[in-house]
Length: 421
Image 1 (cartoon, one colour):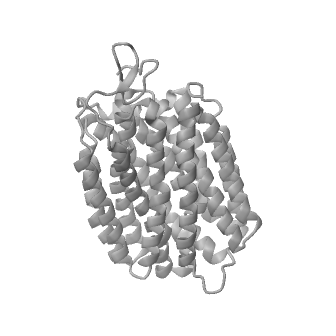
Image 2 (image 1 turned 30 degrees about the horizontal axis):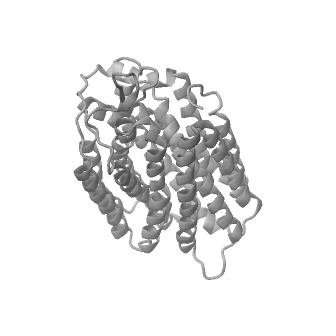
Image 3 (image 1 turned 180 degrees about the vertical axis):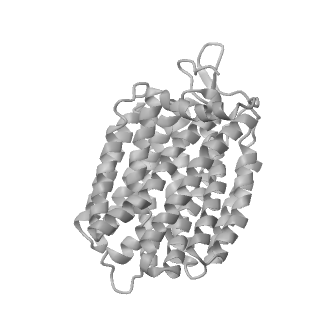
């Protein structure tokens, strides 16, 4: 497999004049709204299920050990996410198709969510959510690879903004649906499954796909070696490190949002923690929308990915200091807004940056799957780290401070990248 030629990137092929263009036959018209819808559905489930329904379900099963149990389930299930994402990416690379994998992952979300809502022990919840992570990462690996497959480099910022907008919009939908069904787990889980399945059908029906040449199967040993080969690339490795650090800090706090509102924040009289989540998420989402759109557009306009990635990661660190210094409700509102500005811009621009440092065009999905380990891998560590910090310190202040430090390190990690400004 040849390395990408200078001036090209995954999802592009050189024209006769040497310029890069979208791969022949891969349409981009109408693709951005479909990417927005596909990622919105995915993030709605990712936020609404573990952020509300799963946390409440675990608390009902064993209130005294909710932090430890939630950390354990989140960590173990994230292992499945870590494994299935690059594996599914490699399989879609081999098949030369993305749409069938998107459709299969989306449709399987319904029975898996039904199962999750039907169990009543910590062990069975863990098993069911592990299956949920596996199914959703088949979906995620394929839909993540659509940008490097079908979008030209000059439009990567806009496409990444469309992908990034899925997070704030999906988070808002996830929080509202989760709060609405907080007393009816089975129905809530099914609603999320249906949302993902319906969106998968919409995407695969409307986003026409020209199959790429299928790849010959490799021996298992060669496949395992190939998964790590992308990390030998200097720029890809630093992009991986930066993403991992920031995501670790983000999920150490975000994963425990409901418990933070219950046990750390001084909520106004009459406002329940579940209602507080439903109020904070749209604030955070609106801030993400603004920074995602502006960040993607400005990074395209000025061709400065590293500057925007580093600055937004630093802003996320500043946001984490706010609830560390104050446990008031206004402090949580300010945290949600500032954190949304920082994280939204980061995800939009960093996604564009990552697509530009992928080592091999023909292995785009596999290497994006490896990069997605930087998303899923820290989620394995984050719940354990967070639960230990909270247990040792007796509260959440130390957790905010540790997460802020990780965000600063994530901002600094993009500086060594050479091939992108």
